[in-house]
Image (cartoon, rainbow, N blue to C red; front, side, top):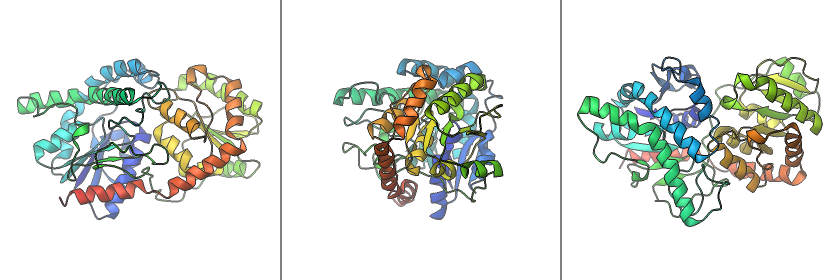
Amino acid sequence: MITILCSGSRGDFQPYIALAQELKELGKAVRITGMIEFEGFVKSYGIDFYPIQADFKTLNVDETMLKEAQSADNPLKMLLTFNKMKKYGLSIANEFYAACEGSELVIYHPGCTIGYFAAERLGIPAILASPFPMHKTKEQTSVIQYGRIKASPLKNIISYHMLQGMLWLASNNSVRYLWKKDFGGLPKNFGKPYERHLDKSHPSVISCSNFVFKRPSDWNENIHQYGYWFVKEQTEYTPSKELEDFLNSGDKPVYVGFGSVFHKDQKETLSKLVIDALSKANKRGIICGMGKLDNLPDNIIAIDSIPHTWLFEKVSAVCHHGGAGTTSAGFAAGVPSVIIPFANDQHAWAHRAYDLGVGSKPIPIKKLTSDNLAEAINYALQDNIVENAKKLSINISTENGARECAKVIVDSLKM
C-alpha cells in the first residue's frame, strides 16, 4: 500500500488524486489521507481514503485566522499566519502517523512533513510530492516572491529558504509533539526535509508544466517535473438545462469564480462589482461559487461548483483567484486568464500568466474595481493573447506529469 498524505482545500487534493489514479493504473494499491470532509470527494474518483477524524469545526479553528491565511498578501503576513496555524497540527499528528503504518511507501505534501519522519522511523521510503516548484535554484524566484521582487541568483535562493521555512513552520510542531510524547525525543536529523530527496529511492516529484516554469538545470537529477497532474474525471459531466441553454444562447461567456478564498460576507460587494464589470466590458458571464444571486441580467448566470475540465473549454476567458489548480486548468483549456490574486502563491501564478502573454496584468483583490476588471477582461480577449493561450494549451497537452511521476514512484520501489 502506498499512502499519500495531503492537506489544504479541495483544489489542493486534486493533483494528488491524479497521481493516485496513475499509481493505481500501474497496479499499485494506493490511498490518500486527509481531513474527513474530503472523503466523499476523493472516493468519488475510485481512490481509497484514510480519514483523519477531524475538520475545522472539531479542531475549533479560528475563522478569523482562516481568513487571514487566505488574504496574506506578503511574505511577512504569510509567515505570521503559518505560525498561528501550527498548533492545529498537534491534534491530528497521531492519526497521520497511524496512516503511514503498514505502508510500503509514503508520499507527502510539503505541508505534511510528518510523512517524511514517520517513513524514516518505519523503515520505508518517503517521497516529497509538491504542487509547485519548491526546491532551491538560482534560476527562478519561488512562488511566494515571483513577480514581487527583481530576480537575481541570490534573491532567488533566499526566496526558496523563505518558502520552505514557512511550510516547515506550519508542520514541524506536529512532528516535535508526537515524537516527544510517544518516542521520548526528536527524530534523528530533525529539520526541514525538503532538500534531502537526493537519490533514486527517495526522489521528489513536482506538479508543474515545463512550459509554465521550466525545470531548473541546477536541481538534483532526482527532482522530477514532467507537467501538471490533471485528474481524469470518472464520468462525463451533465450540466443543468439552464446552463446548457445559456451556453448555447450567445457568444462564449467569461467565467468568474474565486474558489475557497471567497467568503460569504464578500458576496454582495464582489458580485455587484463583477456584474458591473461584465456590463462595462459588454460580455456575457458565468459567476461560479457565490450561491444564488438575485436580479441577474439576462447575460449572466450563477452556478455552483462545476468541473473546470468540462466548463473552461466552453468559455472565452477565465477570471479567478489564481489558485495553482484553477490556473493550470485555465492554461490547459487554452483560454486567456484574468487573475485576481488574494494571497500566497496566487500572486506568482497571476504574474506568470501575464509574463507568458496568456493573461491580463494581475489585479490584487484589494485594488479590484469594476473599471479595472472590465479593462482586464478586454485586454485578455485581444487576438494575440487568445492565440498565445491556445499555443500554451497545445504545449501542455504534450505532457503527462501524473503518469511520468507515478512511474518514478513505482521505479523507486525497485531500488
